[in-house]
Structure formats: structure tokens, C-alpha cells
Figure 1 (cartoon, rainbow, N blue to C red):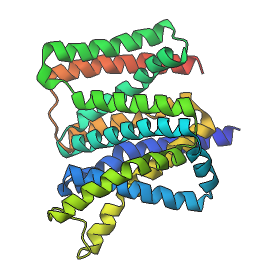
Figure 2 (figure 1 turned 180 degrees about the vertical axis):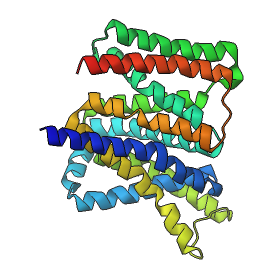
Figure 3 (figure 1 turned 60 degrees about the vertical axis):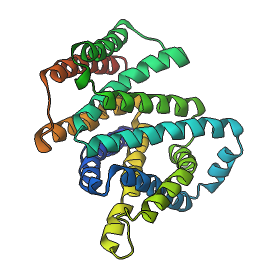
Length: 292
């Protein structure tokens, strides 16, 4: 049991590291093709990668079982929209030097999920978790009242889209990868149409005349799917509590890369807001540790 638990921690840790470090470096580097084309390719090659993994893991029977359930299809349509919003805003943040703002959203997200769990699933809240939620609200209101221009709307959208995405997926409780495949198939027609328009106007960087660049862009699919597999497998082996703590590797690395490597601006106003968020995170993690 202990061996499996440790394996889960390792997998979840590597998945979080991938999202927070390798993912940022890759997507930041490739933003020269334009964030719209990059979002399109992330959608296209994530779908392609998931089709391959569904064949490799012989999961088509699960796919068709889900596809025959109208309730699941409706939920996955809305969760597909949310994951598309999340991907689009996150890539926009990467492309426009707002990695720190995006990390703000991922710091908020687990605490937001606690609030959503209370509202939609009647999950119990103790005084420490309520206080964490109040601190998050105070942090956001502080930014709005002190300096609207510095409001990290990117982070807020990232947090809301990812939080409500997880809410919907929790309601239907299906295989993560198969659910993501169906969500990607909903997005696919729009991605193909956009890619056609980009190509028609001669703005595409994905060209047969440049095979190395094509292969590099193709990596957008595996770069999305691999950390997801690692993290979800980690959750299966050691549970939501421990992996919830480990997830904070992701926004921490994003913040460090944004500030120290990409030299993004970090105002005093944002610093105060982040300090409030970090206090909320510490309280939340301490409570999570004590209750697990």
C-alpha cells in the first residue's frame, strides 16, 4: 500500500511539474506562431493524441458507452466549452507575458473548488476553509478597489473555467481521458474551420515545407495529454487530498518562471493580493493535512 501511495505522489508530482514548468516553456516558446493558431493546434493534436491512446488502451467500448448516454453528452458539451476557454485564456496569458496572472488563478482554483463543492454537493465546510474562501474574495476585491488595471482577469477566468470544469466532471464521474476525447471532438469542428481560415489567408506556420516545425507543433497534443494522465493516475493511487497539495507545484513554478525567467512585472498591489492568496492556501493546506 505504501509503495503504491508513494508511486501516486511521484506521478502527481511529475504531472504538476510538467504543467508548471515544461508546459510553460514549450507553449511560451511556440507562441511565435500566434496564440490563435496555437490554441487551434492544441485542440487538434490533443484530439489526435487521445484517439491514439484510446486505441492503445482499448477503451473504445467505454467511449461508445458514454456516447450513448444523452445526459453525459450534454454535460460534456458544457465542460468542453469550459476547457476550451481555459486553454485559450492560458495560452493568451503565456503569449502576452501574463504567466503570473495565470498562476494567480491556479492558486485560487482549489479553494474555489471547495466553495463549489459546498454549493453544489453540500460538502461540509469548517471554519478554516470558510476563512480561506473569504480571504480569496478579499484578495479579488482588493485588486478591484485599489487598481482595476492590475486586476488579473486572466487568472480569474482560468480559476473559474477550471473550477466549473471540475465541478461538471465530478457530477458525471467518467474516465478522464475518454471524457476529454469527447470534449475535444465537440471543439474539433471549430478548430478545423479556424485552421482552414488561417491556412487560406496564408497565416499558418504548420506547413509541409517545414517538417521539423510541423512535428514541433504536433507536440501540443502530447504536452496536454501526458501530464493529465500522470496526475490522474496519481489521484487514483493516493487520493485527492495529497494530490491537491502537490498540485500547488504547478502555480508555484508558473509564478517563479514568470517573475525570474520571463521578467514579468509584479506590482506592489499584486504582491499584497498574492500574499492574501498564499495565506489562504497555507490555511487550506494545513486543514487538508490535518483532516486526511
